[in-house]
Picture 1 (cartoon, rainbow, N blue to C red):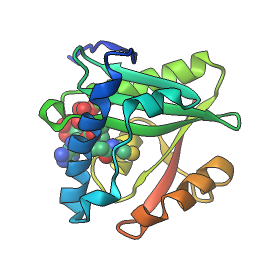
Picture 2 (cartoon, rainbow, N blue to C red):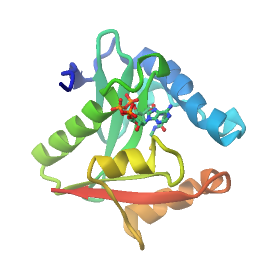
Picture 3 (cartoon, protein in one colour):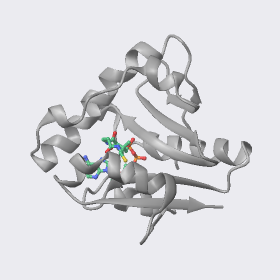
Picture 4 (cartoon, rainbow, N blue to C red):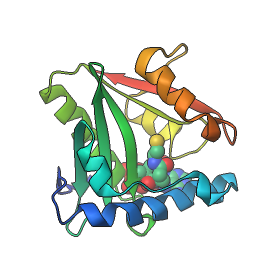
Length: 164
Ligand SMILES: CC(C)(COP(=O)(O)OP(=O)(O)OC[C@H]1O[C@@H](n2cnc3c(N)ncnc32)[C@H](O)[C@@H]1OP(=O)(O)O)[C@@H](O)C(=O)NCCC(=O)NCCS
C-alpha cells in the first residue's frame, strides 16, 4: 500500500533547510552524469519562497520539497528534491501529486517542467506520473530550456506537461 506523507506548504522553519536538501539530491544527478557539482548551485529556501508561486515540503523536519512557479498564466514545477537518505519511498511522487492538486485549485489546467531526458529519476519518473514530453515547447518552457542551456550541454533536456 502507498504510504501517506505529510505534504504541506513550507513554513519559516523549513526554509533554511532546503538548500542542503537540494545539494544532497543534486549529488544524485552529478554523480550519475559525472559532471561538475558547481553546475547545480543550490538556491536558498528563502529566495524560492519569495518567487511567485508555491513551495511545498514533505515531513517534519523537512526532507524534500517542490517549488511551483506561477508565471505568464502557467504553473511550472521549477524544482523537486528529496534527500537521498529518504529517497525511493514515495515522497517525490507525493510532492508531485500535491503540486498538481494545488495547481488545479489555483485554476491551472496543467503543470509543466523541464528535466533530463535520460536520467532514470527524471523523464521516466515523470512519465510514470502522467507527464508527456512536448515536441515543440514554446513560451515559458522555451525560455526555461534556454536558461538551462548549461545543463543541456551535459545531457539532453526535455520539456514535459501533465494536463487534467
Ligand atoms: C526525483 C526525486 C525527487 C524522486 O524522489 P523519490 O522520493 O525518490 O521519489 P519516489 O520514491 O516517489 O519515486 C522514486 C522512483 O524514481 C526512480 N528513482 C528514484 N531514485 C532513483 C535512483 N537513485 N536510481 C534510479 N531510479 C531512481 C525510481 O523509478 C523510483 O521508483 P522505485 O523506487 O519504485 O524504483 C529524487 O530522486 C531527487 O531528489 N533527485 C535529485 C533531484 C532531481 O533530479 N529532481 C528532479 C529534477 S526535474
